[in-house]
Length: 523
Image 1 (cartoon, one colour):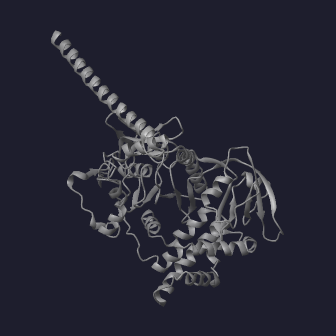
Image 2 (cartoon, helix red, strand yellow):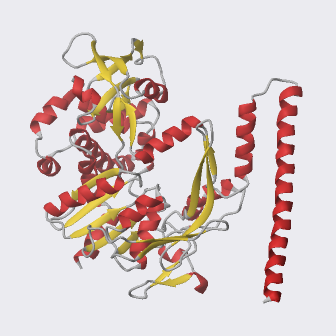
Image 3 (cartoon, rainbow, N blue to C red):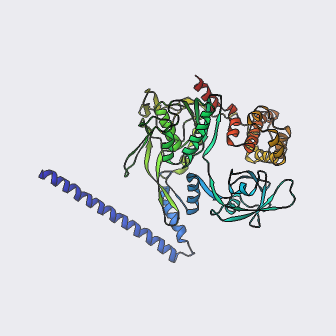
């Protein structure tokens, strides 16, 4: 007993020595940093900003760590939090820029702009008597003028087709929802598809409401589209995973150096506990989206289709600073239920190489050929129910590989798109024919089956391209470009007449991932 007590006292004594030494190192480093800041501010040959110096010092510290530890100033933090919290404060319109003029695509349903009578197709030419049209004002500056605290008022100058002069509307700003759900529609009479772009505070409600509507339409099988989903809140990923996994199943667990390990278990919420499922992923599917995918795959709950996901498996702890800025510090790693680490390898301090990973995958052929990746035995894992082999080493490997289609869009198409000629042609057409189109096409399914993009829209794009010296290399490339133009223009028209679900319903008609998912779910 005496020996055990002495051992405990020795451990405590040694721990105190280590802690004291660490505190001395810490204090010495802080004094050094303070002295450098003070001396630079007092004696440097030119005036300097202490605030800027401190921000540079923080960025410098974080730049030597992993690729996802980062600093954001107060403005950036506010913008980032808005997208995760699911709302911002403003006038409530979806808009686009055409010929240096803001055109309302759609007012947000029941939002402040719709309440005062602003319509799709209206041009906003002034904000509080300051012109924003024809003055080369940046999109960011226009948005900053339209946004503002809830209950504040803003005077908008509106030009409307068929109405002479400028009409003025006073809009009382309000909370505007930021939806993360992109689409929810029936691909076939039995197969529904939901697509969401991130995991925020409202995502669970959006997804469950969308799935309930799809069930009412006869959904018996489900496709979850997580392509280009960059992730978001860990809690949202756990909540949504609980919609698909039985109660008690592990969703994900975290391990870090100086924080307790944490296991997230499914609550078995009422959702889609037994119906067939497929998950679509690509090289931009990351973070929370990989948690959901990994949980579904590891429990053999559904099939995963696509290409290896991004591989972002680091847990960030937000550290709020007094001025509203924030540090997002990596404190742990994510692991799937079978024990796979989601995070891909990286070198500390080398963010440049990390940022080029997707390009390197393309150059190595990984995005084109399934057999271009070879896994050592140490990265093989077994799924929890069927014992299937799955692979670790960064990202989620799909069960069925779909190569990146490099022939779908010609170089000519990509150049036309890069100069906004396609989106502008659509805006011109809607601006000119919105009433006619809305009157003619009341039913989307009828529109989808019968609407043809006018030839003059295609010719307009080609002519505008010629003005910018954008030309096809030959007649064959021109002809190969036309089908892609027709599909995107039809989808954009559907989006503006209805919403994003209708857009994806058209865009995905020939999508190889969706077609493969339908094939597999029907077997």
